[in-house]
Image 1 (tube, helix red, strand yellow):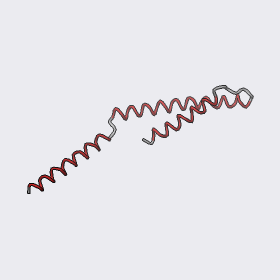
Image 2: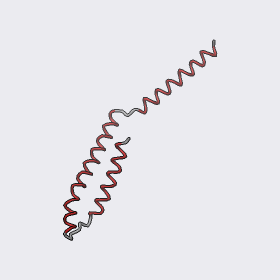
Image 3: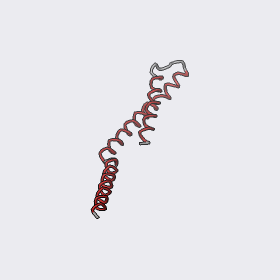
Image 4: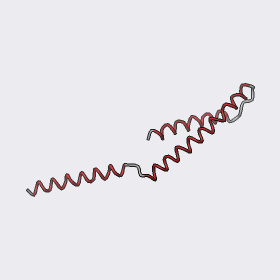
Length: 89
């Protein structure tokens, strides 16, 4: 009987450890809020950059290429990849 009680105690401790680890993995409200804030900031920055491109493309068609157009397009690509990655978390 003592062996069975010892095994039962070990199983119970393993279950407690398992559920404590699972609970620790659940995002807490403050981390969710920080994550959401970061997503919104990235989305706002992406939208702002994207809105600036059409006017510069029109100018480029007239021969007036904005010097930072390529850099802004790279930044848009980088932000969109980051946003896509962050959303999937």
